[in-house]
Image 1 (cartoon, helix red, strand yellow):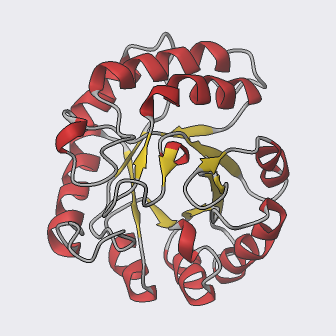
Image 2 (image 1 turned 90 degrees about the vertical axis):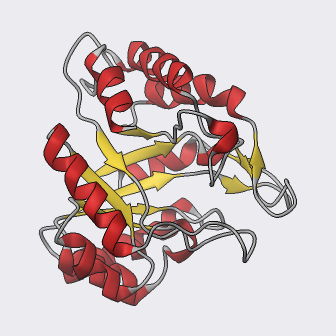
Length: 243
């Protein structure tokens, strides 16, 4: 995966930063029997190896306050998952442990209310850079939509605003014991976010999405990843110098 991401980024006409994200623990699962990750020891070992070999920043989720100091010794950015975006102890631990924290906006949250989450991180880590990531809002019981107004609102609250392209295309719980979704909208959503001027795109990819152990309906294969990134880049050029 890291090799594919490096290739896609390297094919762009100017240098861009890419950050490698993977989870040592997938704790928010639709089914109790769903795969939940390799665990901290193996997961963090792999992330450390990727960061060293490719010279990139790495990012992982944390779910418990004690995960913050554990992961911060290995990865560069700690991520607070969407369903935990109001958890004071978790946000405080992330801010105290890391110089960069990404908070996923809850699917149930008014974007303006993310102000409190950002404040919790900054109170614990005054020098921490805080990112906010839009990943869709609940639309009825089984769908998500992106309200692009939220990007503008959150831009006034955080250091960076990220659009999570693939999670925003999920249909939570729609595939029985797992989430469904429709990856075909990814190129259009990515281009829209780039044209708005987001600071980054969050995209999940897999060499064979049909066999992915998580989010298989919205994962992109490598050719589609390249298509989505290159298409978004063309819309990014010239937007507030964010390319």
